[in-house]
Image 1: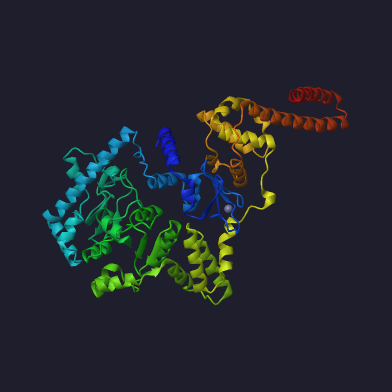
Image 2: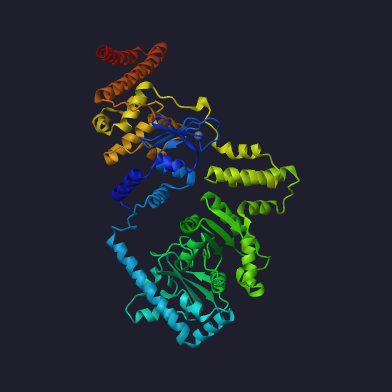
Length: 585
Ligand SMILES: [Zn+2]
């Protein structure tokens, strides 16, 4: 998104979003005048200090100092980056995001070209499966795996010839250069031979489709003992690993209906279950599960059932899924297969009903994590138990919904036989209140000026040139003023205060957030100018004190010439100061 587009979207979101509604997801709020208050979702407290200003659409916690606007709120609570928060809110409030890179026609052209090549390649692979001898071999492999013709058609399975250039030559006949195939992830350049070769060779091809059903990449299973056994397309202009779920284009409706998504590791598990009649399915494909994929799953379902292999790698991947589920607020269960089984060979041996039964008995993520943690650790040994408790508490701390988190804390306390209070104190340790002594206090003039700069933007542009660097040198707000000057020089505009969240120290940001909460009295240009003058006087007084110290030192050393020079400098400053005090009285 270019800057202008981005600002437009952000403004639209800000108008549509309601901070009270958003914050109500995380805590219970009560109205109090033109504000809402509640128990802070960022730290543990007994009396509410989490405050929302309905009018300004801001929040601030007077206990722990967390504050900001709708974006900051979801960034903190949902563990999102700023662009992710924009996407999250845009989706929530039905604001269409402009297509990525919409404004670069070259890039769009490249995407279109790659898309066309990928589609032609799919057609080529499918033809190979039916029209060649090698393809017949591949078909009989699929039959051996008991994959039906109907499934082969539906998922458009194909075959890549066991050749170094079968695809490259086919495209060359249409005047498409290998370089373009390389961009599409289909050819690889060999530097030693200064030539290209096909990426997929001698493999059954499982095309990967976007959510809307466009083919964007391929996965291939080797039939010739080549390594790796499963090979996937690299990232291309139309495909990013970890952003898609295999099969979602076909299964999304059943997933939505069931409000449950079963995740399996790969193509063969997916196809075996699909063929057996389970259609609320998807596969993360090769990579370990990503938060983007959970985000995608959450669009269609409230509950995630992870059905990975029963081996060590599968269990590790399942733990990661639980952790991501916690983070993104998605209920996650683990379907446990006996050791040595994957969904495919399990249903072949025991049938689909046995699998469904295991699914119905799937273990809640928390219980699974605890069991997994306990494995190999003696929960009777105090040090090891402490470690388990800490690990679990760390996971629970990621759950954004406080009510859900509370429920999990209770369960954990039961499973692990640990006092709830102890668990809570471990979880809250990270978000304890800022001790009073660390709180930052601005000078009165500094505080008013900061309010004006961020709130009365009409005045800002008139006074900003009066604000010189030496006026705010050494002030608590120095880093803020510096950022303001920098941003103004760059964009002729002062950003909203929460946009400084990344650049400012936490305690300074908190103090800034707090003063945005003061009474909404409109200020005038003269007031702003007075504040600047007062800061100027202060800087002059400091300069005087500095000179005094230098003069004393010079006199002690008998350097009268230099000390007299500084004395006259000091008188000049004093004169300025007395003029300014006459002006003020
Ligand atoms: Zn707080």
